[in-house]
Image (cartoon, rainbow, N blue to C red; front, side):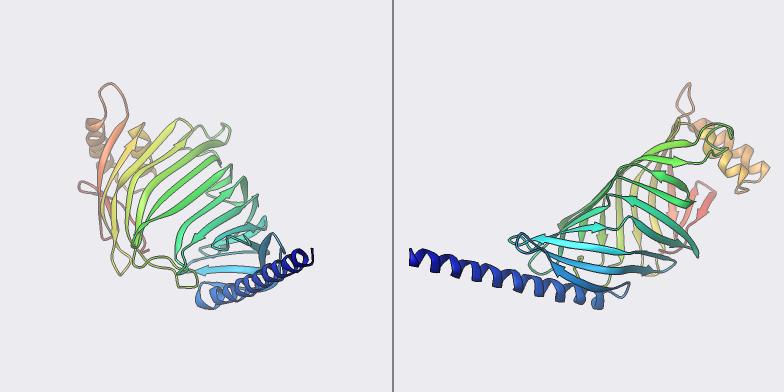
Length: 311
């Protein structure tokens, strides 16, 4: 009996020591991530979760990139005591997103994340889930429903990406619907693969994008379906080159957009209507176009549609 008690005490002490060491390492690793990632700031506020898990709370985390910033009140990171390489995150619902100098209040419900790390702290997989979000003022859209984004390591610095977003809520747009109609709702689906300059690693600066292989992207807005696929490469200056296949369920919407935004003069609009109409499927308005992307200039034949900013 005495041996059993001593054994239980020894095991308890060993487990407690393991948890304490894990909590200490978790806190120091979180601090190292803040120091080693220039875009990220915040402070490690508390440790806890004994005995089932190791918890680290980051207060006032902020991500600052070029032309964009995001912050919230707190992120609670936690991992099962016996699985410290799988980290889960609970993000506070009230957030602030700034784009181009304009600040947007974001209310994100049930926003969680999960990251699986290798022994070398490399990112093997990452997932973000969110039940819903609202934006004030609207960020192109005023709200969205369930969202799931996933990243999975393939090899070297290549990763599979997938995104699903439902319940996209947009204000009425003359290009897509009657201005007096109800708000537009839509969905977004993205599947593809990205290649980075270096593999992702916790505590290291964000790696630059080198190539995007978009196998399938579908945006549904009301009765309009927009599909994209193709391969795009990014050079060291942030300029893009590649070919993109665009599918529209109604080419007349694209033509109206180009005409009303002034990207096509009246003469060019008439010629473009003839070209686009000749590409339409027989008896309908659906169309598939191969667009060229050269040094971030997106063009259809001789027509430059838009000059994208460097990434």
